[in-house]
Length: 404
Length: 147
Image (cartoon, rainbow over all chains, first blue to last red; front, top):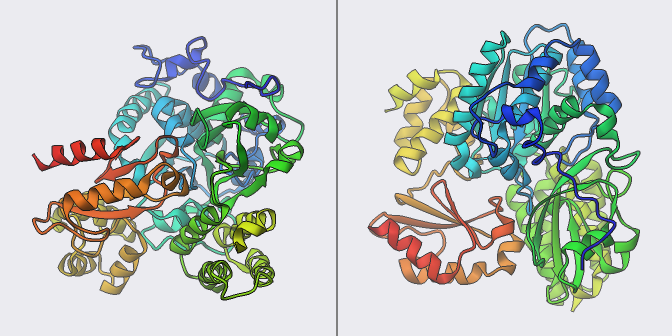
């Protein structure tokens, strides 16, 4: 069954055959010998403040999951008089069930580099970094090729900006922006206290803009199509489209680009297998939505925001297994520096197992829910804070599966 | 080798992880000697080198085989038959998860989501991803590496 209400879009991957952007894609999906970088050429003639205002006006919010307004982030960094600033592209997508940045970097890497360059131009940075998760090391040779011709073009345009690729080494928490910067500086990937925020003190303690892969592509496309075109997509609170990673019990797993603000029921009609029991929106750190709430759930910043991971589970699946898999993941990936997350994750696993095998009464689940609430309040970074999301949404919606 | 790496990446703290990554690429893991030498070259304590290395799952501090197999253990992988792939690999290589074959050719590990949930079960062999695995496909992939 195909949903009429689901609006498929083509901003991130598509349209490159019919617009000037195709010429920005040496080595990308659109093979062309010309390297015109038409958009970029025009953009670096504009007033940086004008570009920033356009991005603010577009309503674009970060696509990594947290959803901070991109234009504001750029504005904060641009206001600093510090001569040394950095642009970082966060390509450390480690959220279970996410793989959209993989496809973006495989198919349209030049759009990412163009977006980073626009950011550098706006905040006056000379150096940029693509922090690529170690699991995607296989992409490096191809990305370097694209970067080489990109640097050549930038030079021809008479603009000074250089992008390097840095590899992660298999640590989920490094997707957290300050942990990522610690890792770039050669340390354990342990999150920093915020404030100061990266736009004030980021990489090497200098003002830094760090955005998700998809966010940079959106910037490129906003500059290509104009703000008004972009605003036609999505809703008041969730402008634009989003690239979703669809996996689990679905006849068509893969990467899909859809307008934000859709109803989860429309999504399930399109991608479900007809027997969808629950959808985990936003990966292990996101929320589990049961069937009875599909109709009332909006995917977007006004409902459940997501970095794009959509895992579908049908009625043959045990939600207890889903939960323990997530908890084991968090316990392994917790960096261990703050007590709520380090101890909390371990206790949650022990707790749900104890309830399942009858060592604890079902009421103990309420104690565990209180524990996740404390973790949400007291954990130092997003990892520990977000354990509560999946835990409470799975436990409260599938309580009987946790007990019997 | 470490001398050459410091020439390539420099001797600042920022060079540490790229240097460790390069050593793992060449030698499959970080030996005590290697970590001590890196510490000396970068003029930091061995504890800092070990502390950093042990944080990252791809910077192994235990001996590993020439080919490190990392099977994805995400919930989606589990739903799509990861267990069968592990069983196939264990039978084929005659080792358990976490072990290395006596000829030092293969190490078998499990790892968190490697970014292929649309094509599970999946695994990495060193840096190369293999997806949509079946027992048969897994066997023929391993046989290729044995040649």
